[in-house]
Image (cartoon, rainbow, N blue to C red; front, side, top):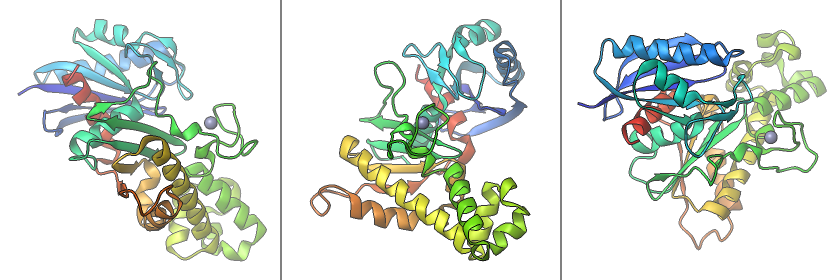
Length: 313
Ligand SMILES: [Zn+2]
């Protein structure tokens, strides 16, 4: 049986695992990301690969990296949350571990994992939207991962939806991810709580102060019926639906998969997203409605997808 290792390198954690050709994870390994030092990141990846490869017969390694990966799938050109700049990650790791290595953008790897083994199974045209602190994305069209000309496609989060809107980490303003993500939930809930503390009784109780508000506070307050938190989720649902309708105008997918940390609270917004999406779709009533599903592989999607991309290298 062909086994590969998938490694998902995020801003804080490096999650890795041995994956079989059915997408099953046979063994896992988790390390902290030495985010400020590219050399240490490569060495840490090599360490976990060597450890796992010592116990399993491994044929290749797939690395999902939170950054822009070039078209040759060898360099990470830029990473907003790590110190990678024109980093030859593929070569470094491959030399250290003595195995073939494939590097892929982490959201692309996640989309591939869901397409192969999760919520995308059975559909040929899949668009993945990962809703976390920001919005990431990936797409599979006709059974192939869409990477764009230079490997930098599917960054839906930075479509500018409001000219001169909220400032974004990318340096521009008004990006979609500032209105439909974990960070927008915080911005919206905080604004409501400050304007009307009586709408945020649970929220303020949970957080203590709006200055230290976290995503889980907003989720729990929404489940407890706080108006401020529910409104924040409503706003997220409307913006998410608008973005999906816009993506349908461009890409016409058969299925959307909504993943990322915020999708753990999918019960608070997904039904509204589906209704609003149908309302906003151009040509509605005269075209099939793409399904909108919640991701199935959770935080393992990137690791499983990267491992499978290594197998198919
Ligand atoms: Zn942006």
